[in-house]
Length: 552
Image (cartoon, rainbow, N blue to C red; front, side, top):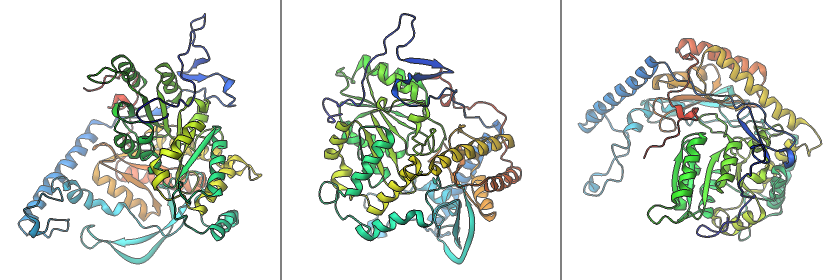
């Protein structure tokens, strides 16, 4: 991809698959609904099982009570706002100063309604201060509120050895210091903490180049570039790849960093239903046939944005089908492997390896080091000409401070550990242990009768709670039992699909998982959370390939 407005650097060959004499697609074969690339790509593994994903609907009475709960909360919220306006109840929210009453409002009162009256009641379940490494167990600083969660005060007590079911520490590499981290300490002593410059100026170190070469080797691509912030890797690089006159086709459940990057690019954005190939193909076909609105000229570029593992749904992208569509319609493919790199695939190389595809089939490979590698930052990888272009035009490279040297060394150490370059097989064992823990935890939750979302191989496991009151009770009760969980609600999820999101780690022992499962079983009975009746979702676009019509 050469520039946002003109010709493109194509990472990988874009072509239509010809038909063989027997009518089958050349170079591809279909089995169990998964399109597979032929073994010529050199990858030893080909995924030959059907994708098993679950998006079960809740019983009708659960949805009724969920909306009723939000409705009652809204009514009482308006009542409390009225009392605040009358001065009967103290208002702790941000308000305009009296001397600015004739100004255009800085704070939109109605837009903050949800925060003031609903979120504030359960705010104690978020932003909990942790005072240890985010390993399989961590320590939490106890805090209490005397004004219904408007402010907090610390009690001075530390809640020790809380089982960590919320951190993205998939391989357990975010841990307290031990001798295996000696190289990180050495780099800290030699280079210091900060670089104090951008990559374009005085901020490119030999450690950065070593890391980029290692990432390219790990992903089996020509080149890679690393950035100091994972979120900015998406939001600051997508605008460098596409611009006005280009079309972005984005999965409806893409991460906020992808959404922001797409919006900043100035390109036209169209949304396809989650993991629905017919919805995507319809948009691709219309884009090729009709071109740009009004002028009907061909799009300069068509870029498909997807994630490897979707962090709120736990689902895995249908990469083989997307690659086939990308080649058929000569589009570009950008895949965010923030949650999948290191966590899926026989050797932890992400969804490309998971499906046994050739990395050359993906034009832009993006990932972060914040999850499986126990560090921070992100990378863009692919063809050398693509990476060289980004070195010059990426906003992150031009304006952002370079990655800290000790962080770069931690990533190098972790990646060599996964690749076995440290002379051991412990990295591979952790990848396999993560897969075992994931399947075990998902299977047990299913057997207990909970509604869980996502792919059976995904270590991100959402457990549906639905009702806002149960969201708060669930997290509070589990913390009292020394289990730390992440609960998620609107606007990060649909209004009626609040959930707890478990992140399984290779560092979790079977004993830890059994302890969590035993407590979840009890909580499911106490809060009546076992809704599963093994029915499909009320949102058919999450699973039904025939539901592809988009709203105008």
